Structures are given as C-alpha cells and as structure tokens.
Image (cartoon, rainbow over all chains, first blue to last red; front, side, top):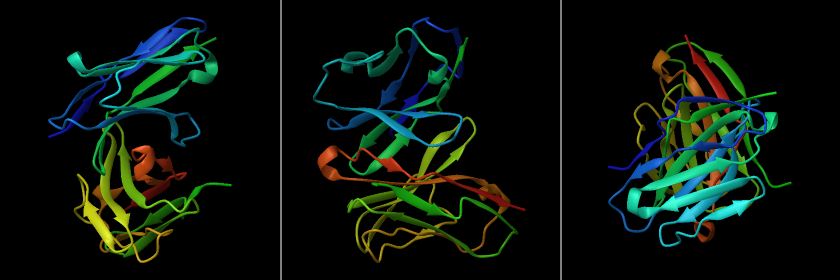
Length: 112
Length: 113
C-alpha cells in the first residue's frame, strides 16, 4: 500500500525565517512521482513541483527548494526567507500509475 | 484560459437525495480524477478516468459513481448521499506526458444533513 506522511501538522515561523516541510513516502513501485501542492486560505490547490522516481536531482525555484532522497524515501520542501504570503496548507503527494495518495498536509503560518 | 470548473461550488442537501457535481476541463486532458478533502486526512482519491468510458476506483469509492462520456466532462454522482459524505470535493485533470501533474478545480463544499 502507498502512504505519505507529513509529520508536521502545523508550523509557525516569523517572516524571513527559513522553514522545511517534511514528507516521507512509502511505495513498493519502482516508478512513481512525487508532488507538492499549496492550498492558500482561499482554498484552491496550486501545483508547485513534480519529481519522478528516477530523477533525484534537487531543485531550486526562487525561494523554494526541494530535496528528494530515495534512500530515506523523503521529499522535503524548504522555503527560504519566508513571507506572509507563504501561509498555506502544503500537501505532499505520491503518484503511481494513475493512482494518487496525498499526505495529511502541513499548515504553515508565517507571522509578520 | 486553461481551467477546471466545478458546479455547484456549495451545496446543502438532505440524506438520500440524489445529486450530481459536474466537472469540466478545457485543456483536452485525458486524465481526470475526483478527490475529497477532510480535516487531518488530506485529499483522498475517489475515482479516476484515463479516457472516455474508462474509469477506475480510487481509495474511497463507496457511495459514489462517475461517468466519462465526453473527454472534457467527469461528473460525480451521489445516488443516496449520507452525512459522512459531507466534505470538500475537488476535481482534477492531467496528462500522462507530464506524469499526471494535475490541475484542480476550485472545489465543491457539500453538506449532507
């Protein structure tokens, strides 16, 4: 069975702090995809990044970076110099074939 | 504008009264999927469809039906809604070429009393 764990239910940081959101996944498949989505207070789901199981390169996009480590089955997300607009619920998701499993989400509050 | 639309956005109904939530996408995506979001549980996949007339169960399909008669539409049907189906529902679409990177609709908040 596939599973995604986001152990941090809620995180609060002060603006400009760096913050890392953890994601640990379980799957027996050798080919799979990992995603991060953002859900701001307005409720929509915004795609942030996709990683394939055969591509362990880390990625940086502006203040966002992602660390994919197959050895520890983790796909962590770091926001550098956080801003109030980063306040949202962040979901990590695992896809295999056409089936997707989402983690329970981490609520990030960035205080001014 | 590329988008996934859902209707209605909000719905309050009573137990047992059949309802349909529509979902439509204008991106010509093959893949469409329905999820429900509940506090502390994240999103759980209800049904998905790889193409017209091809549907498969996700992790929580009980109490739901879907159909895919046209590529752009993927309605979610609750034949006899119950209070435990009170939830926030999202429709999504994507393409195999992008490993099913999904675009989500705005969500439908359903309350069953």
